[in-house]
Length: 288
Figure 1 (tube, rainbow, N blue to C red):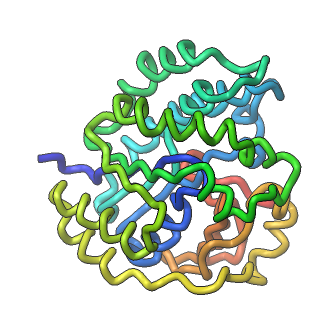
Figure 2: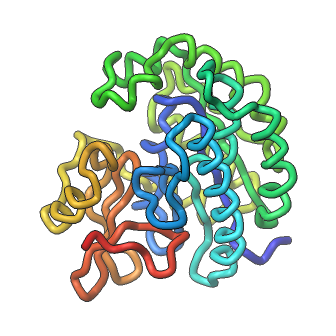
């Protein structure tokens, strides 16, 4: 049996509920978990920032980010306090986009798949579990209000792209997971149903204590407000354009305070300094 903490990846098309599920899991698991928020090039800096603004450049950034993440997971999984590492997306997100997009400047899917096979797959930790959350294109649009809140998010509201992403996650993504994934069809499913299926999946993998904690997760309420302690850092790092909306209340985590947003998270340590929550950075990048 593996002695290191396993990894649970949450992936799927936009609007499937990955981040909502993460936002329920993290408070329930508390100090026993560490998590990676959705890859976000807008929050990358220095040598880790995308080198070219094209679709291909962004996809390459995403794949290299996933390679860095795989290496970090192996290190973090050995932490004796951690019982579960959770990742909002992994290589499947980049491969899905390369397969589904029709952009002229996109990275060829075969190139992206080969990068995964040659570099990312060998670097993954011993136990990686995957939950693929599926949603129909129509339901994806309905859940997200049918209209992009920001211009740069418009492509994720293109029904043709959503159809192709749905096909990828249904037919191809399961073959690219290290172990057979859990498939959750979220159309018509309540958040409690999705959480229960995830909990049962972890229990079947031998993580009974972790699964039991998830069964105590609070029912989601109205969208939380950004905590005033994080307001300055949130705005300095790009605000709504970079982070999206807050998805949790502020959480106590290992002696610090964290608040999760749709596309990132902010972390305030005992000194009162607020930084970007970033498990790849050593140390994490500050807002100022």
